[in-house]
Image 1: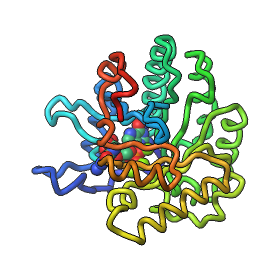
Image 2: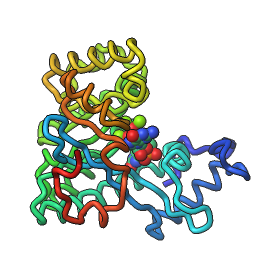
Image 3: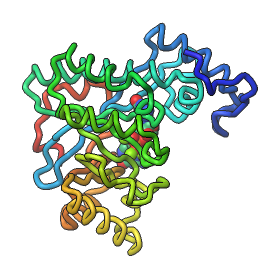
Image 4: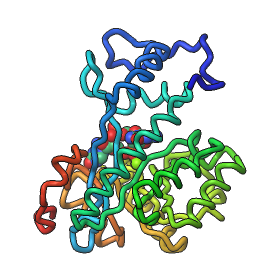
Length: 279
Ligand code: C2E
Ligand code: MG
Ligand code: MG
Ligand code: MG
């Protein structure tokens, strides 16, 4: 899976937090093994309807159970995966795991969507629609139970392939969501012609919304924009009841955040959960 861009002269450190800065090349080699050895794990974070506090879906968030370094967050390995082309098998793994789990909770009577984050590089790959369509067929998933989260940067590269893939999957019923909305490089022009079911307001706007009038203005504007586009709007990073109440009053549809639940393993989320206890 060594991608065209995975050149050998790239030496980038994965972050200041690492005591011994790890080269991407090392991460890439290890990640290749991790995929083979099934060391990746998915956590799920509930998405909650602000109107009544019920769960309407979950977002899948990948982690790497590293044999020596412990449970690694995506920031420790996704950049290396994107650089090397490993993002394609990684995303395929995430989609397969998420749709398998989604089939299990659907069978248990839970009508939850599953949101999966995809990189620009995935959407631009020639076989992306084929991968998604065959997994939907394999698990018998209703396409509208799957939401693919793309960042604004995925729409910046004016790639015809990306838009063609999005349109084709959306025509088949798959939902598309713009993640971290407001932090990317998109001009609003990019949103035209992209069939969206959701805008997700980045948590940098949400976290301090009670104290910062600018963020209130931004959140109001994104809510109004989503209304105009005819899609839902979700706030990410909701950490308090006060913020949830403010968002509900502002007309936000859905919320995610530590206030409701941290991302957790499916085994924990699948434990019968009194819906009313969420809020
Ligand atoms: P994201 O898609 O915007 O996901 C939200 C991130 O915010 C997650 O971090 C989540 O754990 C965190 N979060 C949720 N609620 C709160 C809160 O109330 N407060 C704070 N401070 N943080 C909160 P995580 O899991 O580390 O993921 C980081 C990013 O990595 C994701 O941002 C997404 O862009 C990317 N990512 C995660 N899983 C995947 C994946 O399977 N594939 C791809 N391509 N990207 C992924
Ligand atoms: Mg996301
Ligand atoms: Mg996000
Ligand atoms: Mg984010």
